[in-house]
Length: 308
Image 1 (cartoon, rainbow, N blue to C red):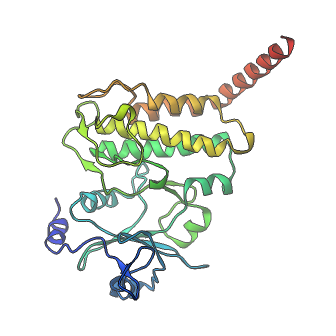
Image 2 (image 1 turned 90 degrees about the vertical axis):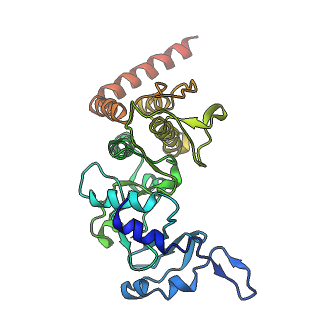
């Protein structure tokens, strides 16, 4: 643990930092005075308007101005130390952490650009097979990078992934247009062993329900399982209005989900993130040929159905 983290732990006073109504009841969507009047918010001209996660995550969103998110670190988790490590390697092309700053004077805060969800990017930038596979690739690449540092995210889901649109890149230096980022390491773990060596751990509360009611999972394999579930959600958005998702993308998502056998040691039910990225690289390379074969099959199947 870093010096900054140990020092911050000594002065921990939250979260949650709740806002209150005049009658003394909690205002779950509000911003507490201690943040509204915080010297760093005033210095930066950040005016927080509402809470994305009551008492923990707050947003400053204004038209024609940079939008920010401010998160109050919970020092009972590993999130601060994880962000310290990830932001130290922010220039790695495989690092899909949002370029952010850690405010360290007093209780530590994370100040980061407020970006968009994947659905917004898919709709605004077009739903094409290449874009779909690019989203897949960026997320697998980002998770592989985490795993190379022995970090398991443990709560990968649509709500913990954001995307930068072209106007975000104009407002925020360091943010890359059409890049996908992984956020929220509140339940993440730093592990002694890497993929292929780490046995199962007890899962923290997660937004994706574990299969078969399991409570223990290889943490790296759990991340890959959650990626598969996330990709199915992305495919569902892609398929709105009757648009057919590429067969290769559907098969790939199912492959990541795998067939769970309840492994208590190193899980072999699905690929590692590294293997998943390598396979996806081949799929992207062969995508035009795969699409041609798919169209030929669908045409042949259609003619066969008509003839019968």
